[in-house]
Length: 395
Image 1 (tube, rainbow, N blue to C red):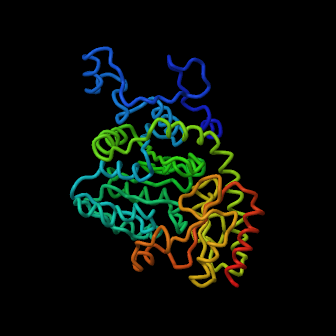
Image 2: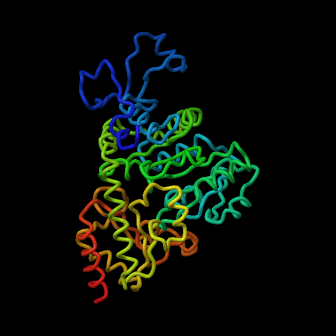
Image 3: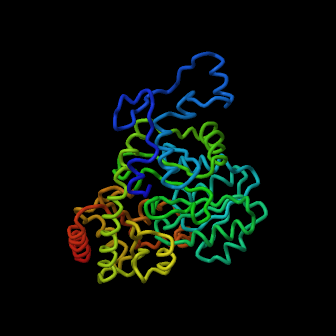
């Protein structure tokens, strides 16, 4: 099935509990009944397929996992209670003391802090380099590198990395290196990392896949062997980052409209990026759909459309930039992204306020950088809101 159909119909299950309902039921159960002690033993030993305890698996979660695996083109999928739950479960499952991660400099704030602060305390080292510099990526690989980790488009700079080129470099150096990509900003509707050589694809389901700003969730897609390790050792025995059946149902419901939402979001984003590029209040616009984006050709090669995330630097002062954000009336001042409503934030004074000046500079985050998540409102209303806020900030 093509993705527009798959988000609605893929991996529909028929169980003895279905009663002909069109929607999969929510299995609100923390534990599951065995027919006998012997059956319980077989399930715990992995000799019989079946449910034991929702931390190990749940029918509602499994329904979502199978649908996401189908859409991403992976052998298996694991759902978690947040995007960071997906990232940390992957790390705890696959890495050990003495291992090395090579990662891009442009990372989601919590991922950056995990790699640069937390992992070093546990004996895992990380090197962050600009993944746009492919020669530097190649030179930075080490004999103990077990994971190459990056995003594209990146948060919050909207930098685009060449997925196939990076995966090829890593696997040519050592075929056992896991190449891991956070595909949140693109969603599986716009970008297919596993087809380009990535081993593990991570999403914050909170964002585009759910799409309604009402659920925290994450997922990891990959081959069966890796997902089993991440499920058993990363999630079950380490993070315990288990998605609730109710939240899984909400993601299933949101997923069904992914295609129609993303089409409108991408159309709106391109129009707003073009408007911002012409604005006298804006110094620079970062959007992969613009020819002025330095990686536009790479984005065009690996993305179906260019997404809903825009970052831009204003020509205003630091205080005026904050005033612009505060003066928006239709656009909502909030973190997160990927919902039906447009959201805006000022990284330097919000999400990345704990970064040092050096870390901000290394990550490409300037004092006047603004991150915008495009929603599905009428684009004319969004542009009019930007206009009035810019003019108010300048007064």
